[in-house]
Image (cartoon, rainbow, N blue to C red; front, side, top):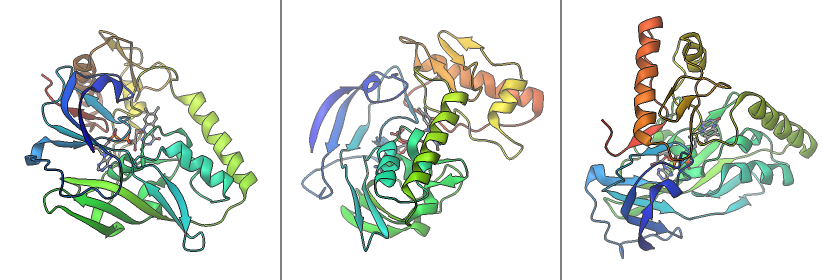
Amino acid sequence: MKKNSIKLSEVTTYKFGGYCDNFFDVDDESINSEVNFNIKDQELLVLGNGSNLVFSDEGYKGTIVKPNINFIKLKDSNSILSLGASTYLPDIARFSKNNSIASLEWLIGIPGSVGGAVSMNAGAYGYEFADHIKSVKIYDIKSNKIEIKDKDYFEFSYRTAKNLDNKIILSVDLHVEKGNSQEIQKKISENLKRRKDTQPAGVYNAGSVFKNPKEGSAGFFIENAGLKGFSIEGVEVSQKHANFFVARKGSKAQSLFELTNYVKNEVFNKFDITLEEEIIFVGNFS
Ligand SMILES: Cc1cc2nc3c(=O)[nH]c(=O)nc-3n(C[C@H](O)[C@H](O)[C@H](O)COP(=O)(O)OP(=O)(O)OC[C@H]3O[C@@H](n4cnc5c(N)ncnc54)[C@H](O)[C@@H]3O)c2cc1C
């Protein structure tokens, strides 16, 4: 465990953000009381791969904890896949192919970590991370205890998990089943192609900006509000996928915040639909 000062633009896919002076790397599962986090409730942020987060240009005054716990292990006669919190989701898809494990191909195009996938209940193509979860090992900062919680504890729903305040996800056990390696490779290739065909590549973004409302796809409503290509100071509603907002190098988190609110208002005015953010803004925005 070490404490640093860090430039937040270097730890997120959007590349936004000022500095954080209280940044802790947690590098194994045996995190314990030696560390006095001294954290007030609202100040702690656990960082995964930063692929769903937007830090303010002013930086973050609270404490950030970044687990650096990376492993993929099969156990219990290959019926359980055990994953460290910082394991990169596409690595799990590749491991699943090499070890003939079915149903994890959808993770190939999601540039997040296991901790982020639990917290966001990440999903794609009909799957959600919660579908696979057996149990989650967490460190509770308030009680200073490591505990193993089963799936129900988190009350998962669409892109949401509950009961994670002041808790750091350390590792996760998934239920897995045997699959056919060639079929797995085929699905991985199909998923990659589908993403390449429909999503912007090579530009800073954090995936879908909004959750899909019950009325349909957020991208459909944004596109039909005529907003594809609309931009504010270098941050643009993607021409390729209207629910991806892409940022030019050097643009500001504040511009993304303004664009997000503008799009939300336009969609509400045109369709009477209130979009809810999937990306998470952290710090001061006005
Ligand atoms: C190109 C692109 C495509 C994407 N496609 C998809 C998609 O198809 N489906 C989808 O669901 N998402 C998608 N995303 C969004 C994102 O990748 C997912 O939400 C991912 O699960 C976030 O993981 P992360 O590690 O980056 O989390 P972060 O962005 O670092 O954090 C997200 C949330 O998780 C919490 N968190 C992270 N790690 C821990 C931990 N160890 N303990 C406790 N809390 C933690 C954070 O505090 C925060 O609240 C996409 C993003 C990009 C850039």
